[in-house]
Image (cartoon, rainbow, N blue to C red; front, side, top):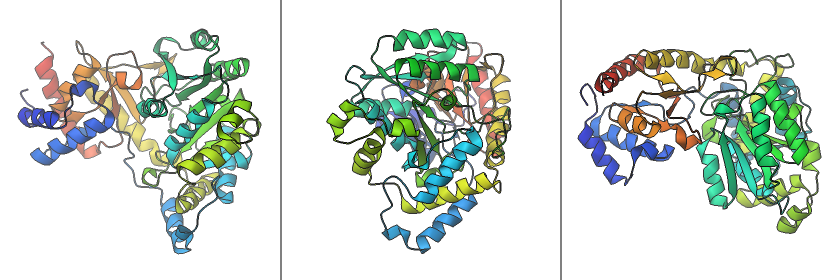
Length: 438
């Protein structure tokens, strides 16, 4: 490992301490723990690409609103489980302004981050029909959602969308949905980790099939508006954030504050359920949870049981942030464009040093520069690449952790500082010199 700034012996020692059987197959949190220990022991800082954490300061308008709310004493008061009224109203306006979709405020429900939203949605969807016991993930996707399935003890199926873009997506989805056991379809858009973005035609396909087979589409919008190839920042003006909600009323949207407002630490997001689904009666759901409608099951049974609501002060923070973007006084897209600019530089550094981009294109155009990108190295599996990069002070996760069938790794740009670019280039050169002739 010539040219590496990291002592291999120390890395191996920490791997042994953490009892990680195979580093290349380690989870995100295992990689985080390993890198933390190596950094502490060696004093050398890693180029950290393993975890999707915001790398920007939190939105000031949110911070100030939350401080003000705490000073008003909301910290001593339980909020309504389905959310404070101002937040619900601003969330509905946000969906209208930036997605061109009308939803009723009652279906806009704050959750402890989108992860709590998906957890309760998975739990509810799995109990709407006794014949439907399986969720379908359009992969690659966020690995922890599969972990939620594991914790819930639920069945799921997956397929890698890499080879099924455009009209091929319809054929592949029909293959699963025609069996009659699928209750929901889950995907992220823009996609974590590939950064592909579904086209209107593809979203229409998903929506049409959701109607045909009566399944719920769960659209994870953690990176809302971050397809920087188009300016999605002006409220009420096209272009709008693409969404399946244009083509079906069987949807749940998950809008997180973590990335678009860099408000990850306060764990606040909104799940959006259309009125027709919110008010729908499911006899099996009623039998299981003794509730009346889908919406009341989500709020008065599941969210109430799990956390009895979402942080009161954080709700006021999100209210203020949504209000500011709705009124046009805060351009959240401008704030996060830094991720796309960093991705452009980082991609170039990898490409110049023997690497390649895995998910290169969005059907007929190059993949956008954004929060994530995917890379491979000749002759190495994704797991091998993760393991080898660890010795050169670069951390990431393998694509197979995300449900991808392609060999490579996911690179997150957010935690990499611009003043680390020179060191990243140096380490990539050393890596390539070590492996290019092997």
